[in-house]
Image (cartoon, rainbow, N blue to C red; front, side):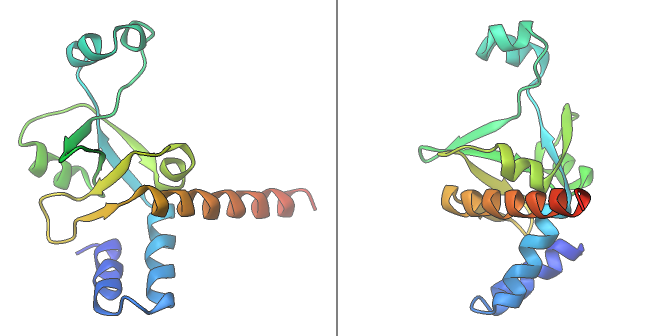
Length: 143
């Protein structure tokens, strides 16, 4: 069980506890995630211009009309879900928050008891938090 798992359990146990939620989101923004990516062949088929430019394309899964960016907090969890070797990128949580745009959702640790779905409103809020933290850090560096 990871620290992120423990924090998620605390949130699920006490959903109205602001301290638990704050701790979970803080861990999320400061964690590194493994994001499966499309193979070169898949990328060429789905987005030929991006693939030709050498861009890495994250795996987005559609379920019930909703697009999910797949995220895992360990390469082992990612491998258990994909059940095959896949390409991936490691991405900090704050970067995911800064770069994800609606209507994309996130699916974290699918296939485990610690899976969590992040909805666009939640992701937008995390983006605001990440931007505020970055602005505060920049202000401290400028002193």
